[in-house]
Image 1 (cartoon, rainbow, N blue to C red):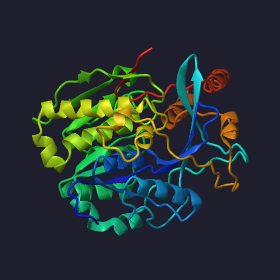
Image 2 (image 1 turned 180 degrees about the horizontal axis):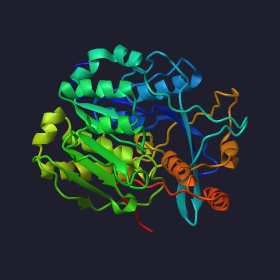
Image 3 (image 1 turned 30 degrees about the vertical axis):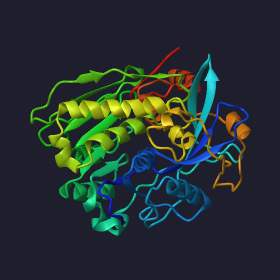
Length: 386
């Protein structure tokens, strides 16, 4: 453990992102990713001590994730909590349609056809390995729920941390309700979750609720003064030439926390609405800048080693690494991934499954065929300039 007073812990999706560029001559980029992995990596880049909590094994995929996290100064003390398992893999495939870049996701290996490894939640045993380390944190972040994640969040909250919950969609109703009972900030995208529900109820711990609106920006409501207020919208930041919107929400979250959560929950509550708006706009600004680069944290790689004030102008690229399938033990080329079948994002995929129960077979077939079209992934706080 380090002595930096800016300390953040996180539990959730820490994955290997395989970025297949829209540029046909650019090789695959292999980077640490996932919502939790991205938010903590960005916080580390902004000067925080960041501690992701995961169950990664010693396989080559996990080693690549760890190598990239270490590159950005992320602490890996709790990256391999037992019981260990294979690291998740997320394949992002960018392509240009009608003059604009869109990204889609591939969940299967193009060589063997098997589904790539997915997220596995930490266990209570893993939480016990972390123990009281979370007590010294200013922020505790979670984007995937489990009993162990909620236990760590509650422990961090009791010690004064600001607990942030960023659901990608509806999960177990009981776990979701319990999360609202401990989370002080709840942030979600309107295209994945129309309404978190219950965030401002008497039993909820929520101080700030944020709903991102894609190219329209975001809206938020709070109860810093005690009583819940109404929704307030913040317009999008003009990103100029948008290259890739993936990861914009992660930048928005990290920027908000860097500006408003340095002193934990008490500092967040005392900051006031004006400071909160300033922090949200700062997060939107970081998100908009990253939209000019490929990848969820592309701006960091282009500006490797440069201070935050300089990387808005950086253009250098990072070193490529090949794609890898842990199932068939083969490396797939960028062209292999480009030929593979795309898929909807997780939130859209889950909503489709729910909707199928009320549709007849003919309508289901039609919609499934339509799902292979380009998916425009939205972010929190950018606007495309045509």
